[in-house]
Image (cartoon, rainbow, N blue to C red):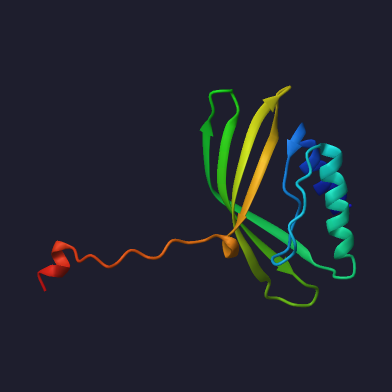
Length: 142
């Protein structure tokens, strides 16, 4: 029942041609991004079938949302996502992955719909090398 509600929430909030990357576990191979509501539903069913024998509850924590209007009337939404996986009988959840999510949202018939979503998993992002330490005036005075 919860999965059905999630599917309705995800697909019902997608534009008819909405692109959304498939749910993906770290280390899993990349798959084609579904481009339609029906494609999103099919990908969600496939994702849940792969984990049918593993009874877990996944919670997604979204925060630090930056919402910016676009010239075409849509909105860019950029936010952090942290996934918590809880297993039956285990009090401490597994934490991760940590991601940056980039959505394009539009208003359609008074409802907010997702035109596209790009998820950048932190463990796959190429981080630049840290800048060399440059002493500030306060540190140089010591």
